[in-house]
Image (tube, rainbow, N blue to C red; front, side, top):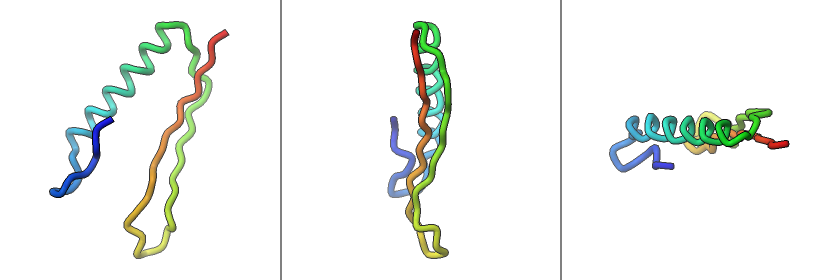
Length: 65
């Protein structure tokens, strides 16, 4: 995964690259017989007006019989 930020701000090309990496990995796992059973997103932050920090995460749950 590539960093979203640098000294100049948000690196939009890295967001697109990360999306392609994740899509490729999910496609590979599906082709290998894994079953995608759930996708869960989450955010962790203080949530106040002056909160400039936060963590965003997406979890992909797979199973294979």
